[in-house]
Image (cartoon, rainbow, N blue to C red; front, side, top):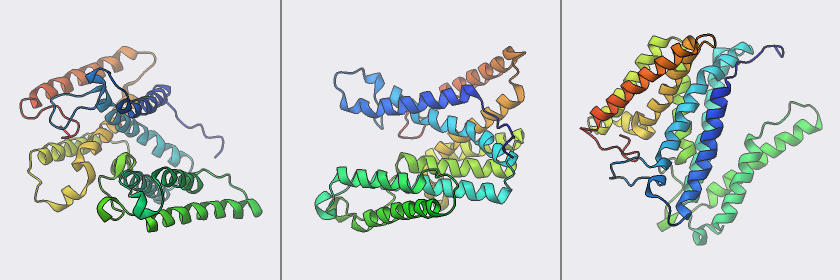
Length: 294
């Protein structure tokens, strides 16, 4: 199995790296003064997208593009469908847990908790590293040591959860799940949909269309009484970004040819123009707003 060559796409790796860099960049923008308005996040009722508003959707799109490659590579290594499903589940759990702790850290009442926000952050990140670091596969004493480190990380998180008190006495809660939590939900939905239908382009297009339809209907208020829709974080909009990335990845695998690059570029140019027209048309019904998911 070690001789199997895993498929990587340099353009996708570069795109993900740039997105991660820009996520760090825009996180520091709110602390700056006298900067152009277009660099900032738009407010909820502003009819615009600031530069900062474009980074998270771009990250979800890149994540969606990586899903087919990641899952197919695991199958090439010999994993069964069940093993891949378990991998998706535990990766989602990791993202959700990290998202929950980071979002609750922002509303911590240090006096009631007995732990200052900086120390809460330090212990939280230390626990993340202890639990989710990729430890080498070893045996004997080192294996027990690595297991003990993981258990120590779990114990730290349990301690922080137990001690936590939020503003006005609120308890540890999902709130809006945090950025990592939203990534986790989107990854879960996109990965399991792909795991079920694999590289069937038509079925993935149908899944994307249904998710876009759910997003539009949700923003139109048509799902306001449907409990399971409201229970899904982002109400399908973020999942649509991820599935769009999945479809883009499948189109790239099908049509990208180094010998005839113009065919692939022309296809995506046409798709881009079509999406731009759809955006102009939908602007007659909703403002352009990241916070309103339109």
